[in-house]
Image 1: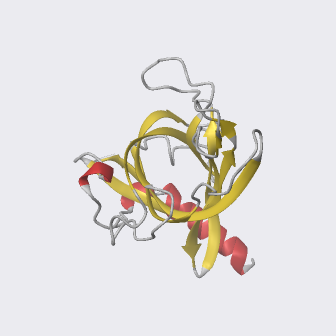
Image 2 (image 1 turned 60 degrees about the vertical axis):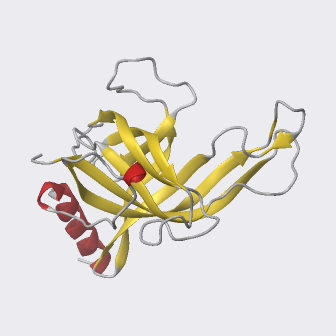
Length: 206
């Protein structure tokens, strides 16, 4: 069996038993700290892009920031020195809303396990600007660091449980991804590379 296959098998076993694991996020300001009673159990290093679309403003000008950017990223963990894909991050319609309210047709931030297809949808509840906190968000000019609260979870077609009980997601250590500063024409699109660390939380005792 190759080293890569062994690493993937090891990653699957480690992450599948994530309830027994505890990761250590950096200290964070209050506005991006999850509620007491929730603990981080998984972290993934994201490599991807923030997608921007140029749209008209209410003053008749154009801007890249009329709508929020669309994230697309792959999250990795390190196993025996090899980066192993564990999660994909994108926008999608919330199929399992916790509050039973109609889902936003524009979609919500989504993370889907590459190992068992479980998903979590989340909405930002707090943010700080890049460079505002040396320990958790040190890079000036980067996209904000965020606290996101779960608004839906799904086991997926195979009954997976990795992300099914996620309560909060932190986006920390962001680098890059900020909106372009150039002028633009309506309908123009641009992808801006970024990296970040995503920490996933669940209620204590689960």
